[in-house]
Image (tube, rainbow, N blue to C red; front, side):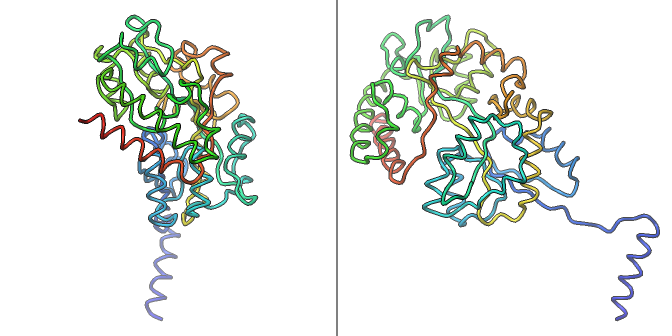
Length: 359
């Protein structure tokens, strides 16, 4: 009783003196891509919501699924997988929770992107994601050194021998499949057919090894290779090319003639997240027109808002305009939902290519 009275007296004295009782800040744990939580944006969010502390873990699609699968959806409050990586992961591992879209201001979202993500990430009548940013994967070239570079297969053109690069990930498998006249997304429903297609692509990429300067692993590595001239053309994310365009306008993103591969990164809530309200606040904050330019400046990607391109910083907007015609934008190939078994096939094919090209 004495202890209770002492606490009550202390609280009363604190209020009388105008001193607020100490309240521990809630932690919002983000699992996201590098550059998707820039320091200036985090600082502005924490200033607006001083009762929330943002904790960031940078990752990628494969690692996000792996981390959340290992914990059954625990350890994080908001994740940002790409739109094609959610349906199957949820169906197989149950690592996400449905969104309450009434808590998200979607009034200025681009309808095609919002509807597309809804269609891709609705399971058993429950919605699991909304779009954040979009961009593409394709090619990049120094047009003074590779003026005719325009197709995935050009990475293997002998006239660029020792001067091209690519990343050993599923993007190059899909791109080469399209270049060979196939539609890999249409083959998803038949695993035997997809295996045969990937084996053919593997043979092509193994034979292409002699044409490459190196396989790149990180955007900074590729940037250095392009700026130095060691590499004149590469497979890349458009955001990497947009950043380089600001340093050397001869280096441009090249949408492949078969169409750039388009992705949409999302906001998705892990099943056992503990800070739902803080997560909704973060979504609404970073999707506000005031913050979108700061986010695009960091990522090089385009916001999923109606005026996402207009809200990009001028240098990124100029790079996008230099890269895409209206026809290129109409020819985008959006990644399709990945059904079970597809990534196992791709993983083994990538290991086969890696083993064959490291000899």
